[in-house]
Length: 449
Image (cartoon, rainbow, N blue to C red):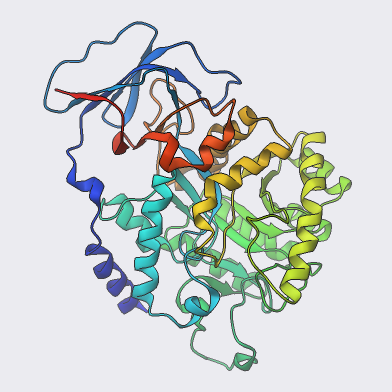
């Protein structure tokens, strides 16, 4: 499928990015802003923040002088809120943008162009970083990093690794049984989901994704809503298979996360050395206690029966209702046992839903204060990203407004610690969006030198 990689790269080259037309200032000074630093429960007193290159270099209560030049910009904050860029810890940059039939039948170039368009929209919603939890995003990530298209930083998992008939098995029933030396299925050829059975195959598939550039590895440990064949209660993979994946990832200095809902799926994965659990909605108290003892992260999503639920029908709807019913209990257990909790959306195969990315974050106030929610989506999620260690594609301090931190910054009209709904309407309330020191949106009063 090397020709496919070439085609994708060529197609991405023709995508125009409006942000590339503007000159990139060497320094940007935000004057008179109140700071949410990614951790505090209150905004700061009025301050001034200087960005030079891609770093925050100075934060002061006193005015900061900048040397006038063609590459200096001063933004009048006028008491608005300055905060870190948002981070979605469970995003699907490719798989969110198309339906299942489109994924399985559409031209790969079309899929990539759709994803590039959505990547820019993601950034313009204020999400400057995402952890991609399965999908063929390596080419898109490269295009974003090279400035060919605008989009968030991507921590890619590559393909989700699944057992036969598991959550990542996208084959049609007529493709079973697989013949010896058979060609790849559509899902595998796209690197959306790959099948591995047994210790040796799991180890091999993990190494392949690391070779392609995965910053962390994802396995399917149990049944899923979006998958066609596995009920929610099905546990997938053995402790030995998880251990093979964990050892292979650890040799590369990174970690394994798993899709899992039920106690058996979660506990088996933890026994195999897995460090992060995605979802966990059907966990019980013993499972939460085990996660606390082992220091395992819960990457949680506010799966509720509301307007932000993916539309489903038939057996998938029954499974979706099971998960929604367990969501409240899962977050209560996470708080009771002091689990390390990250947040993500997990929008999948539903391009109409991506616009609600920020609104979905606001539903976390069912369990947490607005300050806790914003901390989770900034410094908290940044701590999860840091688990990738040297495999992290981006080095530097993220998720905070501090001196020497990477300049991923939002300037917000209003105080999101008092009204988190501001995050749900980025077009109206995000005055400035900056990623890596570069301004992608600016509707403030600005002075250039």
